[in-house]
Image (cartoon, rainbow, N blue to C red; front, side, top):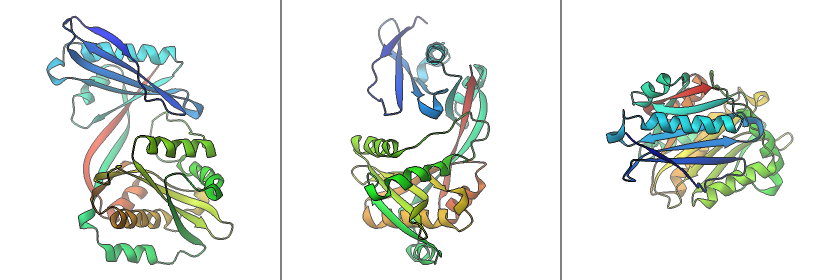
Amino acid sequence: MSLRITPLTDPAHGAHSRRLAWLASDTDSNPAGTAFLRVFDGGQAHLAELTLHVHPVERRKGVGSRLLETAVAAARDNARRCVNAQAEAGSPGTHFLPAHGFRKVLTLKYARLPLADVDTTALAAIIERPHPCYRLASWPGTVPDDLAQTFAASRRAMDDMPMDDTDYGIVVWDVDRVRAAAKAVEDRGDQLHTVVAIDTTDDSIAGFTELVVPGNGKGDAQHYGTGVLPEHRGHGLGRWMKAESIRQAHGRHPDLSGLLTDIADSNTHMRHISDSLGYVPTHTTLQYQLDL
């Protein structure tokens, strides 16, 4: 099959990453596949994330291989040391990626909480249970100025999340970065909701959980990060915050259908929290890595 690989201009640039894009087409200019490569800065300047799609009728004709070759060359040109890609378990990608030198480094379990099935009485019992020396707080959108510094500092709670063999790096957060992340959600028309646990002895944030709701308040919302600082673990803060996040979503967005989450298979603690709150497994995704 004769292919043309065309670089595209992609507007999906973030404050700390940018995305490269390519279109594969045949001699009649019919689209056959796409590849997107996101490259990061800061503590992830070694990493690129690949998303590759080939139209089902064009598979096994070399389209994916050509797109992959182009994306990997760009990763090398951008001084990356590894490229990550995901494929749903049982999909063609689980054969394609290993055949091109990728190795499996992480298993992600996806789950969904149907909001119609939420037991509000049980949820209230979790939220109202005393947590001595801690209180819950929350906000929509960007973090309030008086909590910005401690919220940025609390992001290190994610530094030791289980990532198995993934060369993920450490994301370095400051106030500008947390504000930029919130603005990115707002700019695409979605709603960011954050719940935190605050240490009442010094008013510092001990942990957080984030939920992104579609702009129209319908469909499924997506959990983003949930983390508790190491020095505050063992007090049930993760489950407490997540229960409050569910309560708020249930009460404030009556047209919302459910909440989605994805957790590393090896993160047994967080998976137990989700299971206990009623999340139902939906599918499994495998993450692969190509070392350059």
